[in-house]
Image 1 (cartoon, helix red, strand yellow):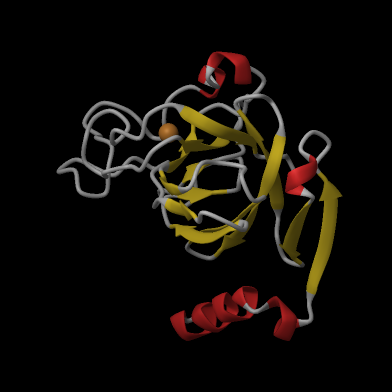
Image 2 (image 1 turned 120 degrees about the horizontal axis):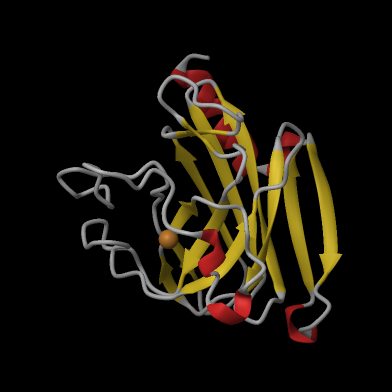
Length: 203
Ligand SMILES: [Cu+2]
């Protein structure tokens, strides 16, 4: 798909009221009345999703993933108050396991693509890792809505064109950290604890 088409697609996805082709899902947060409705705008073409849990194991939002010809579109929506206001690092972690919220989501392992000769961070000489993503911003009030595009991963079960597979045997998780990623410090950009985690569902 030419770049112009990709940009047109992105603008359509960013303007759901105009696109008229989105499936609107809504689900009630069971634990926090103040959060009211967690609405998820799922593009009709989205291939899979990851429900996001916070460190208390509460459902705070959802991430949707759509495979493109050169990478994966990531769309994140988090309810108001789901994470603290400010910038937060986000990465793909190597294992699709977020059961251990009480233990800091360590079961999701390290960043996807961590290995010899590879460093964390877009600004690192030997970076980035395949799982690196840009930070997202949580406002003081209202929900978080963020979109990212990764050219280093695929939703396939095997590598495609050098892109690492998210849905291989041990899956993958989208992890949101307590603080921002500085894109250069090792091993996680000084992003701190793992504040939220979501396992990518298999289609
Ligand atoms: Cu991380």
